[in-house]
Amino acid sequence: MKVDWDQADMAFWDAQHAAAAAPLQQDWAYGSTMKALGVHVLRARVSQDGTPVALAQFMVRRFMGHSLNFVLCSRGPVWLQAVSGQDKARVYQALRRSLPLGRLRWVAITPEEPAGPELGLSKWRRVMTGHSTVLLDLTASLGTLRAQLDKRWRHRLGGAEASALTVHRVGTNPGQYRWLLDAEMQQREQRGLHGLPLQFFDVYVPSRQQPSQNMLTLRADVGRDRVAGMMFLIHGEAATYHVGWNSDAGRDLHAHNLILWRGIEALRERGVRLLDLGGVNTIRSAGIARFKMSTGGRVVTYAGTFI
Image (cartoon, rainbow, N blue to C red; front, side):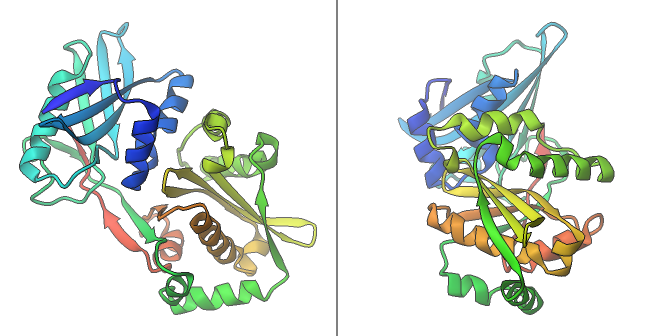
């Protein structure tokens, strides 16, 4: 295995990332945004016999005057070929050994796959269990996607479509979507949740020539009143449901059912093949988990964090 650090260019990375419908944390624009926010980022291209087999983007946190480094590959690597568990183990070993950092470093990997014999991390130690999410395949027809909705979810969608709700696409200027992020920050404070900082969006959204390639925001109104909203971050041919807000009126009218459905339609138009509906926690947030799982998407529990 040969590892080239910070040698791949953006065009190559984007093409491979899109072909794999890979996660946000491995997107070039995500890494560039974190760099702009002061995070040290390393990108690796791994080749076997001259053929690229993996890409891995690492976030680096430095301590003790840069002498100690915590290095995280979140939801990666991105596998470019079918790779056996044995070869994956060789990739992980090559990445850890070749990191262009000092000897005092702590390397963590959170692979984008469930636990199993082909994981390739048997010699690493798992320190955290993996989170669960719902993945929705958008390559199916809209008719198929609608048919796979849970009966109650589909009924609520029909009611929302027949209601006074109107759904609008929100622009990509910060002033047009800031209200939704402000609502998200209030929700985080109330529920004790954490997430990307506000500054991330200000940098990530315009990081490409067409900001609409990076974000889709939808708003539901009743008359002149704003009652609900959703934001999706787009990364290549995949997208992640990132922010959602609902008022009491929006909940009564099942606005989120309608907004998510309109979001599915819009994302398909933009060539998105896979929608990550975000983490599901049936204990702490059972209602949100049921909402996501009732879309008919595939529930996946990832292997966890390994050091």
